[in-house]
Structure formats: C-alpha cells, structure tokens
Image (cartoon, rainbow, N blue to C red; front, side, top):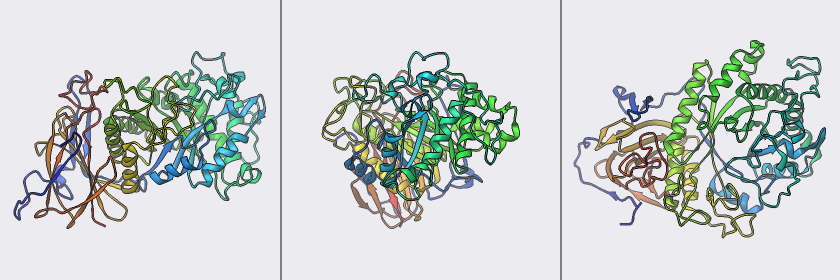
Length: 564
C-alpha cells in the first residue's frame, strides 16, 4: 500500500464496546487532561477534553484566503472562481498607505477602488491591512529593510517599477504619530470633531475608513460599487513584531493602534480594529509589551471605552501544525493576564511544498517545507487546533503561489500553482491536494463547535507532547453531524477504534475529497493511520528533527463525518 494511504478495517467485535474506543462524549472524570512539552522546555499546558463555551464564545468559525486579489495583482474571474469553489468567504490583503498618498496630502485611490469593488462584488468579505509609511513621512529616515509585500512571504512582481509607491513604503513609525488626533488638541472623539492634519497617520486612517466603509465615499463615487457593501475589518499593520515590517518600539505600536482605533471609529462607529497579525517567533513578548503600555494609558477611561483599542487579536503560524495551538493559547493567556477577552483569528497559516514546481524539488530536506500530501495534512490539522482554541476566522496563506519571497525563492505556498501568464513561476494553475483538504475543512467545519479532544498511545490517554502517538478531535457541525479527525504524531503507524454515533458514516480522503460510505461493525469502527513523515521543520520536542520523534505535521488525517 503506498505511503500516506490509511485503510479502514471493519472488525467483528460482538455487542460490547471495545476497550480503548472513543465514545461520543467523554465522562466528567476526563474533563481536563495534561499536555506536557519536552522536559527541556518549561511549558506545561492543561487542555480540556470536553469543549466548554466561554460567555463570549463566537458563533462558530469561518474561513478565508490571503491574496485572493490585491492592488498589485488584481484577480481575474478564474481566480475569484477558484476561491469561491474552495469555500473561502474572506479575503485579506494590504492597503498600502504609501500606495495611495503619493505625495503629502495627495491621495490616489483608483487602483484600490477597482480591486476592492471587484472583491466585494464577488461576495467576499475583505479584511484590509493598513500599513506602509510613505517615505516622506518616515520618522528617522528609511528603515534598513522597507517592506515591499503584504507579508514577508510575498513580494510584488517585477511589474512594479522602482519609482512606484509600494517600493518606498517604510517600516518606520510616521512623523506626527504622537500629535493630538483632533484639531482641538485632544485624543477624545466627539460629534463634529475633525482630524488634526499634523497627525498624518490619523488622517490616512480616517480617509481610508470613511471611503471604504459601507455607505462610504467609494459607494457613491465608484461605478459598479455593490450596494450596501464595504469594509468593516481593519488590521493595523502586518506583523509589527517583526523588525522587517515595523522598526518602531512596542510603545510606538501602541500609539499607532490607539490613533487608528479612535480615527477609524470616528469615521465608522461600527469599524472593527484588528491588532496587527503577530509572527511571535522573533519577539515572543511583544504583545505583553504593547498591552503594558496601554495599561498605563494616561486616559484609562478612553482606553476602556475603546476596548484597549482593538477588537480582534490575530496570529500567524507556519509549517508546524501544533504551533497554531501554541500561539493561540499563549495569546489568550497574555490577554487574560490583563483581564481581556478578545476574538482570536489566524490570519496566516500554511506549509510551502518542496516536491512541486516552483518548490526546490532537488532538495527533499528543504527547511520548513513539506510534500504535497503533508501540505494537505497541515491544512486539516492546523484548522483543528485553531477551532479548538476558539479562533473565529482562519486564513490560509495562500490561494496561488504568486511570487512568494521573490522570483528566485522557489516558494510554493499556494493551494494552486500559478496560471500562465503570471508575474512569477508561470504554470498550469493546477490544484494541489491541499485544495481538496481546504474544501473539506470549509464544508464540514464552518460554524462547527468543539466536542472533545484526546491524545492516545496504544489506546490509552497520553498527553505527553513528546510521546503521545495519536491526536483526536471531534466537532459538531451546525446541522448536528459529528466530524471526527485523527492522525499520528510520530513516525509510527497506529490502529484506532472509535464508537459510531450513526448507522453509517462518510470517510473522506483529504488529498482528493473523495467520499466513501462506511459502516461500523457492532457499533465500532477500526482504522489504520499512516505514520507522520514531516521532519523538515523543528518542533519543541524534536528540535533536531529526528525521525523517531514528534513530527511538525502529523500523518495523513482520518476525516470521518457521521450524522445528518
């Protein structure tokens, strides 16, 4: 049997339930389980096995893709169609300040107008990233590495000329950031107040939100603008905890966030403010530093009235599926330490491949890259961890390969290869297995709520992060169906049993989406799971990437749907 294919075995067991099988609901005794990292890493996490709804629990999860379209590479109808067929409902891309304010006080919105109009007309919700200080406003001159793409993982094509605005975006804080937000010399909003022109960031945020909110200026001025549509989700910078994108301090970012929240809500009281998506790995204490600054805000009543100046906290996670859980859990814990509860999003998540063009097919050990099958497995596993932690929205990075880190980087992040022609890596626009996996996730996990989670070795509970062999998740779809996911975490195959909750189920191949009807024997399913194979990425338990240890991506997941 070829690697990565798991087989289902129907076993005759008699009428009694087999020891080690997983019931529909776990008993209260197992309401909390312990997950420990390697003894060399002093982090211990306690995980509930039975989902418990918090008072402000979101009404289920939704899904999006990064760069369905963008100002730099507007989508054609075929690209929009691919995203729609995958089940994506959200798009995320940058609105570069430097791309619209091309000289002081001069705004050129036409390209953003067209790109945003088309995305909204196709039915997508759009989260825009406000970022990129114009060079003429960069405090202290240009940073050493000015950002030139919506993420460190994607750069614009060679079609952008050296003099185009995107090329002069700076990571520096803008001049005037600490000037009062309003012309009355205060930061306090109120009816009829106007933005202080000395605070150029406040002016830009006000202009962008007033233009693109539902019913804003664009809806009146742009031909074909869809009625009632606009942007409500505004992300304040991208990865401000990476020096590549933000060269200012945590205190500078706290001010950037505060100014943006107040200016945006002045323009649209229903605007939702996103903290800039956190990369975490370079500055793991960044969120705490920013919140500590806000904790000492000289106007605590204003801070509290604006919810500490953000509504959503997004994280970014790549190549290591359990890291999605870890980052969300850490962010949640940091928020709680300040008495805060915020909506959590995963704004970027993915695994680039090495075994398909334009990946480095000559290098099977390429760091942080995987095979096409591993990419498909990652999509399912990362989503499961995110949903369990309560993420409201999950974005995959990204729809197509586009240009990745540049025309010589050989990055293959996409669910699809590029079409021909394309600015970089022209190909056949073919789908990778991860596209089918993403489609299964959006179809069966949209709006899903957690039921239980378990980790086992040889059928016994084992929460040790370094030795636990099989990861289990159960979710309840809005229609009542149960979605059961399971995969191996080590380079060892496993046989598992599970108690059925319906006379039959549908088993899905995550690489193709192919469905097979399956029936239990005496109420029990038995499945064989293939071993994990992804050892190109170091993990907490396996920093040396030894093949007998924890894998960064588990084996090909079981994906079983039972019920309505």
